[in-house]
Length: 357
Ligand SMILES: Nc1ncnc2c1ncn2[C@@H]1O[C@H](COP(=O)(O)OP(=O)(O)O)[C@@H](O)[C@H]1O
Ligand SMILES: [Mg+2]
Image (cartoon, rainbow, N blue to C red; front, side, top):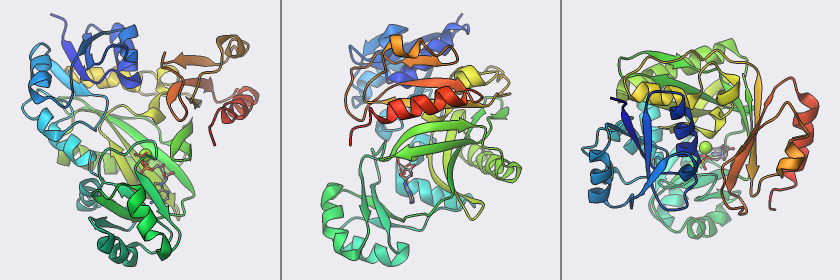
C-alpha cells in the first residue's frame, strides 16, 4: 500500500512537497481551503486548522501527518501521528521557548528577555541594550510581528506596534552573514545535512539564498548543533535553523520544524531536494544523497515576472506558486546555477523593482 501523507496546510511548501511526492511511491493530501495553491498538484480537503476535531478527522484518513507551518495551535496537534512531533513544533512556534531551548542545548543566541507588558519592555532593554528588536512570541513570519527600537523613547510605540501581546525582546546583532542549515532525520535515526546557505533579507523577508556558504568550521559547528537538537527533540523530518555569523561564530536566530524557503534551491541543486527527503524521512524510508552544486535562489515577492521575460534566460528555473499577486507576498522563486552570474545580477535588479517600499 502506498503511504498516505497528510499535510496540514496547502500553501507553496505543501505544493512543493506534493510535487516531490509524485516521484515517490506516496500519496499526498492537504488540509487547507479551496483555492490554496497546493490544489494544482494534490487533493486539498477543506479543513479549519484551528478545529481540533476536524484536524483529527483528516488525520484519521492518512497514515502520517506533517506540517507546512509551525503556526498551528499545539492543542490541535496532540494525539496525531505527526512528524515532526508536537513537542518540537510547540517549541519552534514560540520564540521564547525556542531561545530558551537553544540555550539548554548549548547553542548561543542574541541576548533576549521575555516581555508581557510595557514595564517589562523597559526592564528588558537593560538585558538587551540598544538597538533592539521586539518580536511577538507566536505567529510571526517574514518579519511580521516585529518592531525595532533605536532608543528608549521607542518603547511605547514598539509595544503598540506589536499589538501588546506576549513578546520577546532581542538585542540587535551586528552580523557578518546570515546563514541557515537544513538537515533531515529519518524515523530510523539516519541524518543527512545540506551545505550551509547564505541568506539575504530585506524588510524581514528572504530575498536571496546562495549555496553553499563555504566555511568548514561553521559547517561542522552547525551540524553538531543540529545533531543536539535532533536528539533532544526526538526529531523526524526536515529541520532548518537560521544563524547569525558574529565574530566568525554562530548564534542561532530561529528554527523551522519544516521545509524552509532557504532550501528551495535543493530542487535543482541537490541530489535529493529537501521536499523529497522530508517525505522519505516521515514515511520511514531511507534518505537520499544531499550532494549539491553551487546554486542561487531569488524569491519573487509581490508578483511574478512574466513567463516571456524569464524564458529568455535558459539557465533559470522558474517556480510560480500560482498565487494571487499581493505586496509583500511570496508568489514564486527563480533558481540558477551559481555560475550564471550575469543572469543572476540582472534578475536581482529586476526583482528588486517589484519590492514595495
Ligand atoms: N536579533 C536580531 N539582530 C539582527 N537582525 C535580526 C534580529 N532578529 C531578526 N533580524 C532580522 O530580521 C529577519 C527576520 O527575523 P526572524 O526572527 O528570522 O523572523 P521571521 O520569522 O519573520 O523570519 C532576520 O532574518 C534578520 O535579518
Ligand atoms: Mg527568520
